[in-house]
Image 1 (cartoon, one colour):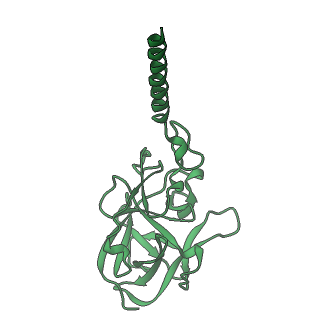
Image 2: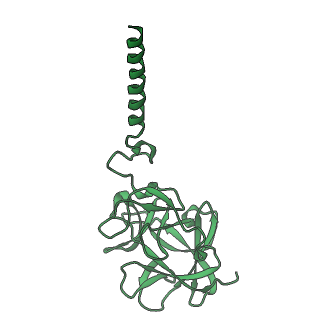
Length: 224
């Protein structure tokens, strides 16, 4: 009789341990960013800066879920020592230009500043310095501007200030994207193309998935 009671108790311990193991292997959505629920990933804006965004694909091919993966940290184009041109993936014969006295736009000619130097400023953030062709002239920096009306945020040129949050951009590799294909954001607002307004900054929660951009190496950065 005592032997029977001992065997029953041992069986209960085994069943309890199995239940704990099964429970611990359940969905881990609660460990992700706030707002993520089982079967529904959190917005890409919740991925930490400096991490690639992986997971579900949008209709445009840009990942929109928030499972982080390390980027290629050693990319020399993000060292501040190389100058680049930037082209929106899917754009037709046009590249990004910071127009004189105006905003960041896509152009198919040589107007404005079309040479950029992403320069690290810490915490996986960058100033994006803009130069004329060949890297000439004193640089100006990208800065997010709020027009203060119903129009969306956009990027314009400003005197470079590393401590200005509006000038500190995150540049994040697109998971599964092409070589040197990045998302560009500032404080959860992503650079994207709008059919109505051109290039704007907008949170992913308020708009379709962000556009992605390809960086093209054009040589050493200016010595300044």
